[in-house]
Image (cartoon, rainbow, N blue to C red; front, top):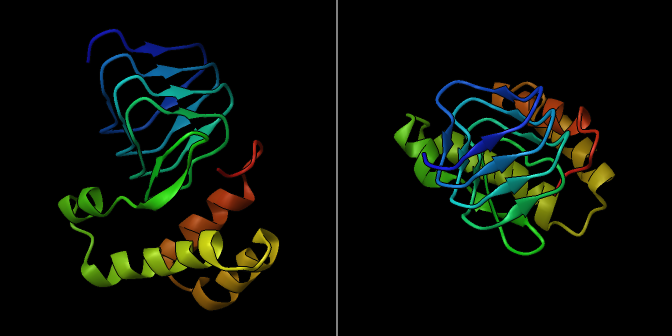
Length: 144
């Protein structure tokens, strides 16, 4: 789209959508099928996971995990990217599983380290669970 900026050394996955005036700082990594709304700013060295959506006008200064919808100031988990996942053929069972994982990580009373360990225990055999755990564990800037 118009007036987007991709700074140096960025890695942009396949089928990424960047709406008008979306801006990436240096060394940003966008996963496949990521969607950035208009005017989104992504801070340098941040990672945006596959199939995630950042709502228009917000800025990400930490990593945005895969499959989620992020919005707000400061940016935060707002749910899973249900519409995008449905359009891309994720079953209702897969979407329910993703939501269950993120409810445990973002909405439970557990500290995030303990929540991540619980996710590993419950979902480590599932490929979607592995994708989420790997992303969180490899985060250098922290998770939103």
